[in-house]
Length: 208
Image (tube, rainbow, N blue to C red; front, side, top):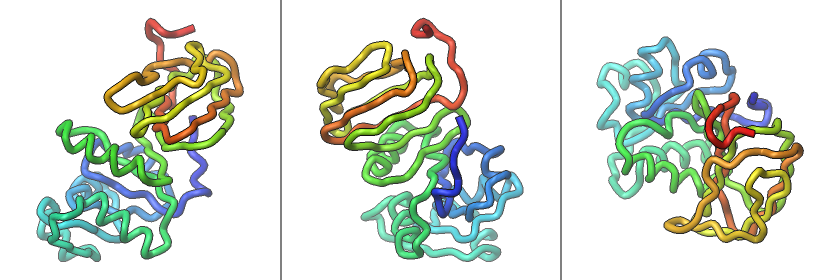
């Protein structure tokens, strides 16, 4: 599954697992949220700016790259960097590095991400928040998970385990590791869901 980069204006890099092959090929500007700059530079990549509280980025990088240091602890580096993108008209963005590391930080990243129109990209997955009705031309057997954020009523047409005005809620039932049965897949959402799908075929007990 490929990404249409033409729709996006930037790549926001968080301090987690990075899809280096994608980052080395993209022509979109890279924005580093604090410590993500360390990983980028170590892999030969250059952020156009570093944004965050600057407690994780190496000091020498602050001398080499433009940076905005906000020491406030009222917001996370993710939120600080996203606010910068909004101010500089660099939205919508592709978010990378959201996964990996401590679970509390991952959950925090997911909650913040759910409030945006960004695309999540990792080596294995693509994710986004959605409301309303959308149709996807994903191949049959594509693995997909839906999470209420915080809750939603979902109807699907094309999943192996169909949803029929099914309530998905944080702390309640979620549709994890479902499969596309027939393409195109249609999802109708009242509320908001996070959708995560896999970029490559995944064979497991749920395969068709």
